[in-house]
Image (cartoon, rainbow, N blue to C red; front, side, top):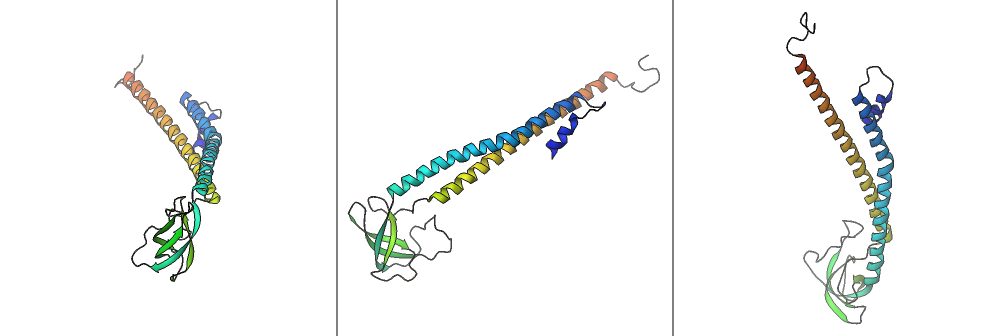
Length: 201
């Protein structure tokens, strides 16, 4: 709104100062940058982030494999490695000792987390591993990657708009300071006799 009010200084007015016109130019420039540059920059950042994240999605799906594990026995205690990509923070996960076959053909054995609510010996469940059978987090999905890219684009656009508005305020603040300094100099030149009879005669 301050930018819009600044553009009002373009109107013809016999009391309009040169600094008013300069502030109007600054306001117009800031408005154009916010309306044009911020969305363009946000789109570029979003597109770059989308490409990088989708490449990461493809790489993760290539490197990580979903294999079938078999429960040996249930383990007590706290989870070994909570899944940061879990769809819900309240998902019930059990810690079990399991066997599974790695994609490279080696047999693996160790503690893992399972979504089975009541795991028993012999139960089967899926677990994500790398090519050597080490348990890893599930790969990033394409929808989540796109969501992150969109958020990055919006963040870049908002940051750009904030920087532009901050720059405009700084420029106007410096202009106002210079204006006050010139007023002080004018009062100093006028001297203490300003307004007295005969001054300037």
